[in-house]
Structures are given as structure tokens and as C-alpha cells.
Amino acid sequence: MIARVHGKLETIDGSVAVIGLDSGLAYAVHVPAFLVSELAESTGISITLHTMQIFEATAQGSHMTPRLIGFRTKEERRFFELFTTVKGLGTRRGLRAMAAPIGEIAQAIASRDVVWLQKLPEIGKRLAETVVAELHGKVDGFSTGVPGQATEAKPTLMTGDGAQQAVAALVRLGEAKADAERKVERALASHPKATKASADELLAAAFALGAA
Picture (cartoon, rainbow, N blue to C red):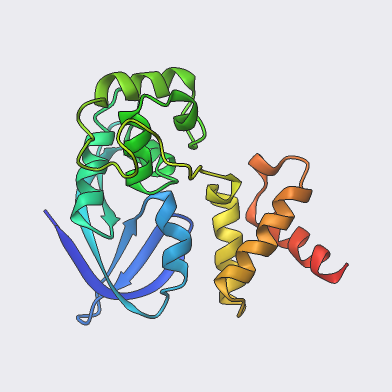
């Protein structure tokens, strides 16, 4: 099992970070949603990701494909392993659902805040209730804030894949991250279907608003 990868972050494409090693090898590492925009600022810099290796079956089930999942800390990795024990939360769905830091998710679970959990991508009412039922009492070591009270921070539209990719693209074009996020937030506010907006649509809206 590959437990840790250290090397230069070559690219971040969607939810996949490509880490280049000094040996010339490069690993494609899938990361949770909340890490995508953060890693976009680290392109070209050496980073360390704590990893776990899984094997996914193809649609036909004829063979298994190995995949690496990466996190900034061992604690994040442990939380993901626990989070994805919930029935209905597989690896890919779990990565997309982790659009907020683990402390906030754990606090919502500890305080049985089903409404807050439904703000996460991929989490509907029934799955949120299942997460609370299966993990309540198991996440106390991960939670933040006042015991029994969910943190005030909420996942927003900015945690969606389209928004994160748009921010990353603006950063690559030379924007400071804070400015890029403000532009994408304005684009989201102007988009009639913000929850389904693609990165290209948000970039077009951001440029149009900037020129207005």
C-alpha cells in the first residue's frame, strides 16, 4: 500500500492531482473537493499527501483499476475511511461530498445537524440521516467548535466542481486567489442555474462582469 506521496504538484485537473517524483515517476492522486482550490495555488511546489490505495471494479467487473486517494493529513485520511463506511457513500461520492473541512462535517454529525449535511454535494436528506445514524458518537475526535453545536461555517456554491475549477483557472491566469474567488462568487450570483454551472460558463460570466 502507498501511504504517502511527496513530490512536485505538476497539475490539478478536476479532482486529480498529478505529483511528480524525482525519479521521473508521477502519481495521479484523487483528492477531496475541499482541497482542490487550495492545491491549485501550489502548482509547481513540492507537497506531501497522505494516501490510501483502493481498487475499483470496471462497469463490466472484469478487472480492478488501482486508484490513489490523497489528503493533507493522516487525520483527514482517517476521517475519509470512516465517512465512507456509511452505506451509500462510495469512494468517488465521498470525495465529492467532502466539500467542507472534516472538522465542520464531523461537528454537524455530532450535533445531528441533518440540514447542514444536506448542503454538501451528493448528500440528500435520506443519506444525511443515514450518515448521522451510523457515525454519531464516532466522530467526536474530528469535530471543531462548541460540542453539540454545528459550526457557523456553511458549504456554499463555491465548493462545487465548476466553481473550484473556475477559480483554479483564474489563478493560473495570474489572479490572486482571493480576487479569483470574488469574481467566481459574482459569476455564481448572476448565473440562473448556479448549482449546475460549468467552469467554462462561470469563467465567461466572470469575464463579462469584469468588462461591465
